[in-house]
Length: 151
Image 1 (cartoon, rainbow, N blue to C red):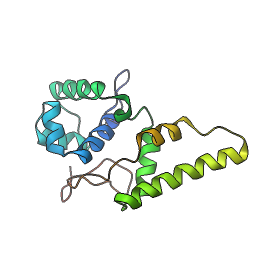
Image 2 (cartoon, one colour):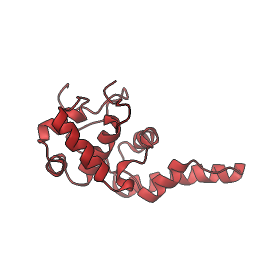
Image 3 (cartoon, helix red, strand yellow):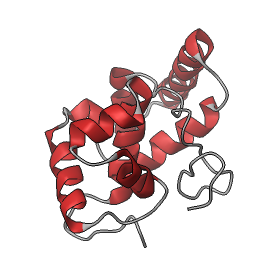
């Protein structure tokens, strides 16, 4: 599997962090910050395995990110939330994000149980920005693809 790297940070985890950072700035800015070319970063974001040196730079960049910008191991939960917020932007996205998390917390309160840790992490972190314009989330749940291309 392209994202599986036993004993190391998975590429799927790095892709989520890159996507989040690119939404805050741009894919080019993230590539520049990492120290690789934009084409190499797009290749990795489209599911490709980076060359050794690029992989080392990606991993070093990822590990230097503050914890709240890394993903904290909640990649599946984050992807599920992104799917729920698909198509929403700005205030509508932020409000819907809070409503979903509040509903989970309320359900656990009514039941007398504790919400999962990812709920607290997401509340602290806030909603991920929408995907940057040069990538899109495929409907089949696979890896992001560059608009207009098949990788």
